[in-house]
Image (cartoon, rainbow, N blue to C red; front, side):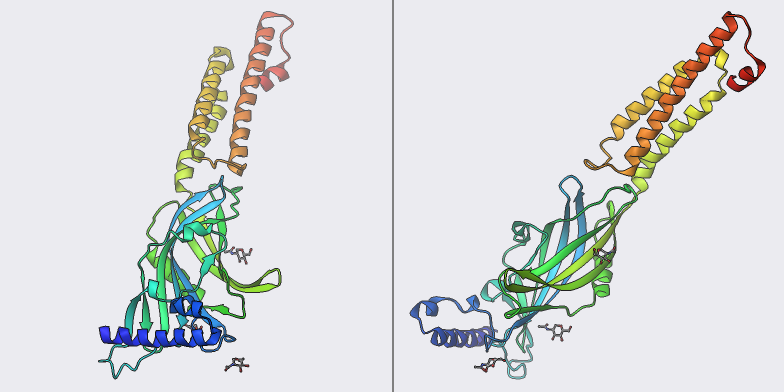
Length: 336
Ligand SMILES: *[C@@H]1O[C@H](CO)[C@@H](O)[C@H](O)[C@H]1NC(C)=O
Ligand SMILES: *[C@@H]1O[C@H](CO)[C@@H](O)[C@H](O)[C@H]1NC(C)=O
Ligand SMILES: *[C@@H]1O[C@H](CO)[C@@H](O)[C@H](O)[C@H]1NC(C)=O
């Protein structure tokens, strides 16, 4: 195998020699071969095929509008300077080469702060096949900006984007493509996804648009990742207790108004509801106003209203029983 690697090396060295002739400078001869985009004719763009697998959805931060996820990014491109005849080389048609020795396309995700993409482990290898096709996979932890809308919390869906593009190479030098369909990416992500946490993957879509920065046009591929929150935890912890408290408050009108225990009962319920809201504040999103907060505020105001009504009824009852003339029958039947 050392023999074959040195063969590849020889080919690469000859490429460097080519380039140093091309540029005719002595400085460039010192530059390692992997510094150059590997093409025979520099007017031919390099085709890079991109795909990824979403292996975990770790966190969705509503306050900072960030999505943290694990991706396995697969890149594939051709290096015309590497090739060998597998029949001459004991049927070896695939080799792993340390990625440090290869030219790598500078693909990054626009939505993520690039420092996070660099959080990929170092010392990875790439597969090189006998026809010069290079397959490079790396796992990355991506913290990407995502426009989160929590109005329908906890029944919300989010649509986050991952836009892959080259940092430096314009369309003249690099074209992006895909060798897999998006449904394949979705299917493998569904199979691989590790977390049974709060978020569930719904589907992945893609769009290919060119990005125009100044006069430079960059190729890019945008993936739309739709995720949905699993609402069970919130239904159990938020909606059910709140519903119970409201129901008890409504049923407390069955307590006889004459017994004078209705108002203290309602005050206790109101206190209980406030404690519930304080405890549950941590489960609610840290920013924005979801519909559920409006619902809680409405419940609280209904309870306050019913307490006020009870006080009013008690007052009227007091008037009716202490001061003649007695209450008219219709008012008595309406209030009591
Ligand atoms: C490089 O490619 C361009 C466009 O395909 C072509 O016009 C040019 O002649 C090629 N140069 C060489 C040296 O082959
Ligand atoms: C990229 O994928 C296309 C199929 O969509 C395939 O024809 C092409 O050879 C692939 N190129 C590389 C460099 O993998
Ligand atoms: C996500 O948003 C994009 C554009 O805004 C749209 O094309 C795509 O269909 C959306 N995906 C889902 C699953 O809603």
